[in-house]
Length: 138
Image (cartoon, rainbow, N blue to C red; front, side):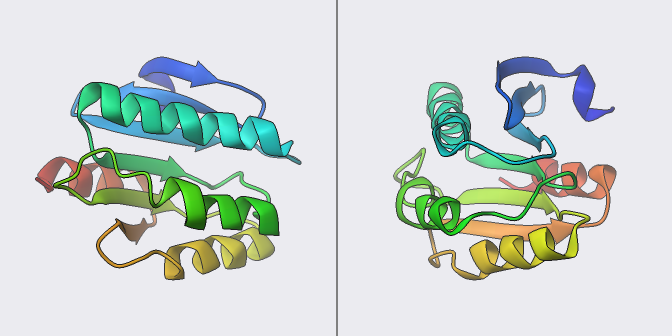
């Protein structure tokens, strides 16, 4: 099922946040430069969605993403990765990496910076495999 057919929870110039019927959130990043407060808003709404639904799984489609700025990397590391949706579960994030080589590098920096036990990232080449992994994870 394509990502665009799911219920949209929030959307702004940075990306679209959707709910998947199998119990995970989908973040679809849009191309282009980002304004930090809009980036922050997208991830804040993601945290709210995960908490509201009691979910801990995220599909992050970063294929169109421009490189993360230093400010965005710091926000992800210091604020988003630490804001666990559940005290008993780590976040599981399936990632489709950006096509842009510099964006790919910045995404790898964020993934490698994840604190063990807070967020587990897994990189995939296609939507179907990423979705299957999320559905099989408890």
